[in-house]
Image 1 (cartoon, rainbow, N blue to C red):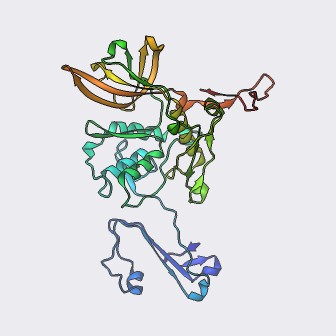
Image 2 (spheres, rainbow, N blue to C red):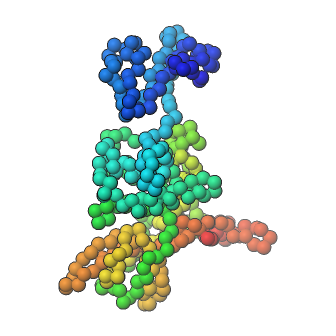
Image 3 (spheres, rainbow, N blue to C red):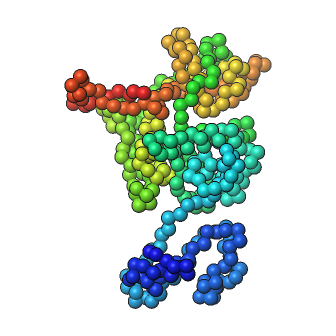
Length: 362
């Protein structure tokens, strides 16, 4: 619809003079709408709704709307957020900045800015803004109700960057999905205990396909399925028993981004070796989300890369130790592309069951 300065619809012609739309964006100096004051006795000059965006829509003549009052929807941009990289406040769909704002807001966790690890939040924000195939790598586009569980709200926003979020030494920290070079090389000399090793997930936690929903302009802002992400390689590893898990990405608004996050989620799951043990103080500066390389000769590991998923200090026999849980990691989780193998003539190679042979390449 086209509206004039007073909010009256002027086109299309069938609605001209029959609908009025007035919008307010919740500014700090917002005044009560004069028409609303005059037309609705309960609304007074005190109803300024500062900090609250709203529409006042009036339909004239019941006969003009024989099928009932139309459903009114609006395409909106959310709250302006502070960006510590530029010291400016503006609208942004950067997941790291949106999560930071929720942590600090009185309707969120109400944290102090001193409790935010802004170094990591800025690194995550930069990673989200990285341009991939002509678009930002990760964006956060969704909404939530203020009475929602904070953990669920943060988890939904976090899903849009495939990231991890934790409290580290009293500070809130965050990382976007990205491969990071190992920050420390560990060997048997650093061990202060035997390693506990798990080589595979249980059947319950294992899967070879990811499916779910996303929502945005591509779906007319209604939840819709993104194309399932799967791998013939993983299916054959699992004895051709299909196992799909659900990953809903309702703060992700494009299929391309949904696929990127789902692929990373799937590949993370297939790196299944987990080790736990106590290490010496050389590991004291390592943090959750860092990658380390580990060499253990009797296991045949030489600089094998692991991600730190848990870290805590401990003491045994007056010896300060760093207890860590490490999970297998590789650069292919984030950069590998699954492609069909072809012969010299370009024919897709197949196994005896007719499945295309695939490989993960960088």
